[in-house]
Structures are given as C-alpha cells and as structure tokens.
Length: 420
Image (cartoon, rainbow, N blue to C red; front, side):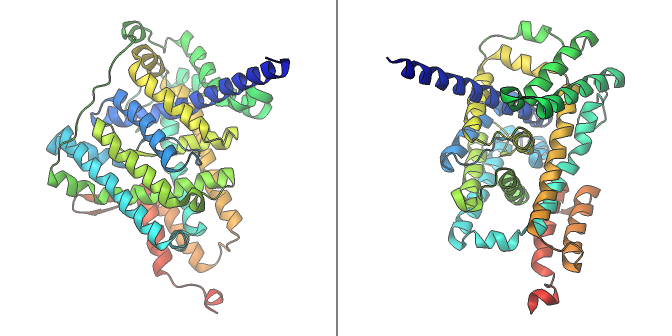
C-alpha cells in the first residue's frame, strides 16, 4: 500500500474516533433524563437505554439518516404511565403506550396525504418559536434543582447546597471554557470536558459512590417486559399521544433552526413523525418508555455545532452496548446530579435562544395584536403552570403550549393588512 493510502486510512480512523467521542457526548447529555423517566414510572432503566438506542436507529433508517436527533424517554408520558401502572399494571400500561405510537403513524399518514403545507399553516413561526422557548423555560427549574443538589422536582435534597453549587459551577465553567476558548477537536467536546471536570471535583466532596460500580456485573441482560392489551389502558393512552406529537414538530423545527436544513421537506415531517411513532411502539414491545426527540441533545448540537446525523448513530450504538454492560451503566449512574445540573442549565438556555431566533428570523411584527396574543398566551400559559383537564386526560406545560398555539392560530382572525 502506498504512503498516501496509509495516510488516508489513518485519517479515516481519526475521523471515526472523533465521531465516536462526539456520539458518546450526545448520549452523556441525554443519559440523566433518559433514565429518570423509568426510575419515576417503575420501568427498567436498562431497558430504557436499550430502547432509546434501538428507537434512534429505527428513526435514522426511516428518515434516511438526515436528521441529527436522538430519541429517548418522553417526559410527557410520566404522569399517564404512573397512573396506568398503578391502575392496570406494567404490561397493560405498555400495551397502551404501544397503541399511542400508532397515533403518530396516523398523523404521519395525514401529513403525507395533505402535504407539509398543512403543517406550515397550522404551525407558523409565531407558534413554534414561543413553543420552543417554553420547552427550555418549563424545564429551567429542573436544571436549577439539579445544579443546587435537589432532585428534579426540588422536593428532596440529594447533595448539600455548597458542594452541589461548587460542582455544578465547575461543570458549567469547564463547558463554557471549552466551547468559547477551545480550538480544534477540544471545541467539539465541551460537554464531555464539563462532565469530566465536574466528576473530578465531586471526588473530594465524597459525592461519588464506587460501591455499585464494583458490585455490578460486566454483563447484565436488561429486564425486558412484554406488553399486554387492555382496552381501558389503550383508550386512556391514545389522547395523551396528541400533545407530544405536536411537541415533535417544535423539536424538529428547533433542530432545523440550528442546522439550517429544512427537515419539514427533506426527509419530510411525515417521515420524522413515522420514525418517532415506530420507535415509541417498538420501545413498548420491549418494556421501555415512549421515545421522543430530546431537547438536551438539540441544545448540545447548538452548542457544539456538530450537526452530522451519523453522530446519533454512534450515540444509539453506545446506548445499546451500555444497556448490557453492567459496570459501564453503573459508572454513568454514579455521575452526581449537580454535574449534569450545571451543564443542563446551559443546554436548556440554548433551547430558549433557538426559539427566540426562530421568531426573529420569521420577520413577524410581534407588536401586531394577533401575534402578540398568540405569543403572549403560549408563554404565560405554558410557563405559568396552567392545567386543562377533561376526565383523566390533562394538558399542561409544553403540551398545553403546543395545543394552545395551534388553536389560537386557527381561530384568531388575521390582521386587516393580511386580509387585504
């Protein structure tokens, strides 16, 4: 082989190593939220890790590997899963979740039939911009709670305030320094650098427990659970899927704002919706929570500028491997919550900025009465904690903001200048 051939091969290996590290970084960002949902709902975290990786691969196949998103546990289903598990048991809840994924498939077929123009009319920037902002702002208390040593809802103190703030600050500072001052490869790994720094700073405070890592087996098969079909659970879960499906549009538009590529057209929002729905139903088949595009990963893509969809394939592969390797999973689980809290503060802030940028680039006059009403009501109702309930079905937070924005955009009359 010639010198040129050897140099090219070495360069290829270097690129693969780089992409592998970037993929690991994306998984690292998503890991905390990924396992939080099963921990809260009684599902198995290792199964959630496996189904997140498998779901992301399915999504990549359906979309032709064009969209840089990672699919993992959906927060929108936490309360419904808890209720369904308590009422009908885990298998029946999984059957309902499997049916919920079919709602995505129906919406995908509708969009494929009527065209992407339907989505553009229903979800213009004056709706999607503030909804994207709500995604980051609603989750802001979670980031602050984790950074200050509490659990996600702030009800339990996991780490004393002083050490927690020190660790979170070190993680955040290292991430900012790598992002703003780093050059070359270092500038692409700010989150891994932040996590490593926070982990090391945690050691003197005694925040890392190495016992579970030593006790964990090298190989451990996740506790897969098969779904069972209960019509009550299915009918309960079906309407729940509508709101996160609408949220899906906001997430895809958010990543579009980051990369500058119109995923509504290529590969098409009907394909991204189809991929999300198949991933959700497939996750339920194995005992995992529903999948959704992750705001944390969108924030990481924004921060790093690493927009290659192949990185998500690497992240999916690592997720599947970690689900079977007990010690690796235990090591990731040993990362103290303030480490991730410090970084998530920045990532959720990046999501808010993406939404603001989407509004600015639309060129809409936000002081015009109709636009002001839509944007203002989405932000206040979405962030303020307003809850709308109808029987066992309820909307709040991000889901409420999305539905409210769609309804207002459809019912409020256009301004006189638009009608002329």
